[in-house]
Image (cartoon, rainbow, N blue to C red; front, side):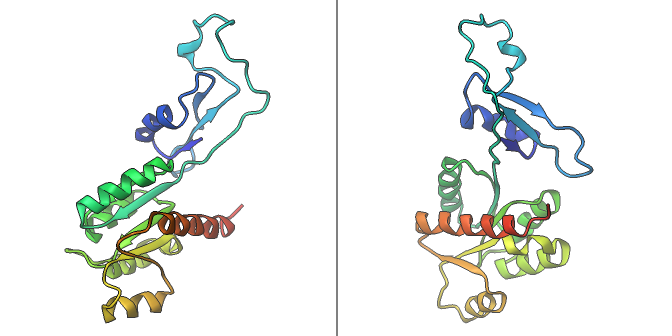
Length: 194
């Protein structure tokens, strides 16, 4: 299990509560966010006192599951909270922002695996946020999925066509959103450098 930062370690208890998992810090990652690994072949120190009869047998090979991070940008707090719970139930780590300006601060601090972005928001709309990311971290552009309730807005329609963006229309169908996230993860995984 890859966890992108220390605050995400709490998720390990939810995602991998088994007693035969150990969390290991992988060390300095050359300026990137540190990673932690869950290894099924080792035991946490807190389990050292367990009797060997109650300990699960170590697995011969360690397994690794990558946990993906999502930035969810939407000014509708109720929708954002609902989507956050939904996505967390699919084992994603979700950070929310209420507008493009707040989202830009998040992007500058961390490279998210997927960015789900509303189009019409106060302070900085989705198209302006996308353009700001284009100038600051262009490698993240392929990670966008736009969400909008303004399908008939000519400005929104024109922008989405101009960037050939992935879009889900409100009300957001759960299966469609998860499918779009999977598409982004596959697309960015295929383009990842070895």
